[in-house]
Image (tube, rainbow, N blue to C red; front, side, top):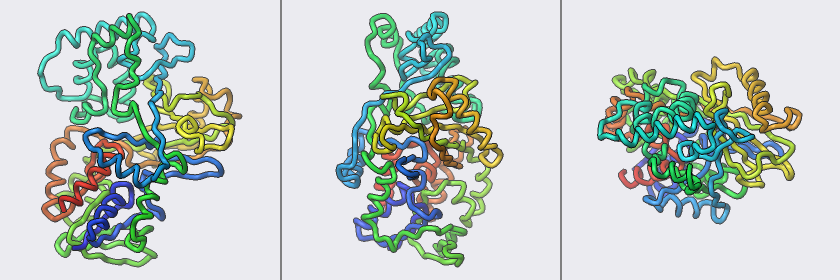
Length: 439
């Protein structure tokens, strides 16, 4: 049996690892010169940057992922407890920072805003019903009230998704948006109980001690037969009748036969090259958000102890920034710090990146993350064309059909972008393991 894997990111390499362990022949086809996909790191001098913050979250329901990662990293791993903040102009703190999650820490807001949020949450608890929420915005209002939705969830999520929250479905929210009851919020407000550190899937996270997230994919790659991983190889056609993949490598068109095909490349990219014409009409309707990641090296270790900060305020262009030196000091030059800044855009090709970076630097000074732009040693820009899949109603209606249609041709489109979903790294490992077992 021969399996061809499209994409040499975390999901693709884990699939190869599992196939090799079972003695099944495979070949990985990766478009870029190096493996990793978006699970990659960039080294510049003494600084290591990832393709935005890439942290490992282990689900207790799937212990295999933690065992796998621990084996691959072989001691090169550290465990951290999340210290994240929210920057909002509605805070009554001196630095405008309040603890995450917003819905639990409204006591840090200005009195009028705090009252509005508390009343909204109270009414949402009183009026709770079993009705089905048709969209994300209504789900937020029903679960958190109008105030919390207005001052945090709606502006923050609009920044990420770049669409109205009325257009987004709710199938993904249970895992990623922690729900908190009124009593818990009230007790925190009055008695200060429950700081919020254990809310959400990422309250604990893991990360390589050395060499950035690249060390994870490099660790998997070292276990593989390197001749079975083809880099700088771009797929141009998938012939489902002949079960054949055509790709270009070294300016030559080459081909591979397969019995099963595992695709981890973005689903629209697969649909562009596959010969199943009935699926091509869906390409332009599978919507996504791109992200520009500005990595910034700084001459001092700024914002001590904080891992990342969320920004709901609409006058600030980035939605999140993080600090690598607070995750591992081995990612920066001694005595220095580094920031990753995430800006969501609809179309990278229509974005003036230089102007955007200039504005980012100015706003980092305005919010007092930096004292001056003179503290910046250098910057690095990474472009993530596919960053977030938009869970709109078109996706909900047609994605199951598309994936099932592919499976009838023994094609398994998996992982964050192959399965066209919002997922974290350990879920992608699970996808790979379960797909290989299914095959």
